[in-house]
Image (cartoon, rainbow, N blue to C red; front, side, top):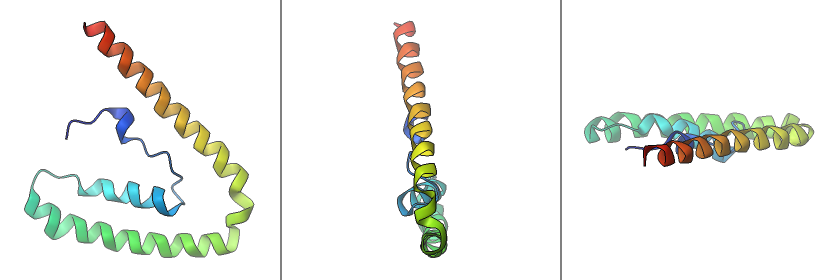
Length: 96
């Protein structure tokens, strides 16, 4: 479970089905398999279900109006991830 910071960044929007699921699924990162499968995975599935219900209602009410905003925010999240990747590469080069 040794991930780089740039690998932990979710580029998808928080109010998208994929983005919300990826963010919620982060709670299942546990070394203890029993706790993970008996407690954290069912909790993540439960939260994902309710998040998706909320997102579906949100899209029906306001979704189409926010498309330009979501595109701008996505590009800023991608830029943040790319900057972290660049920094990590430079750190690895400095170590050598």
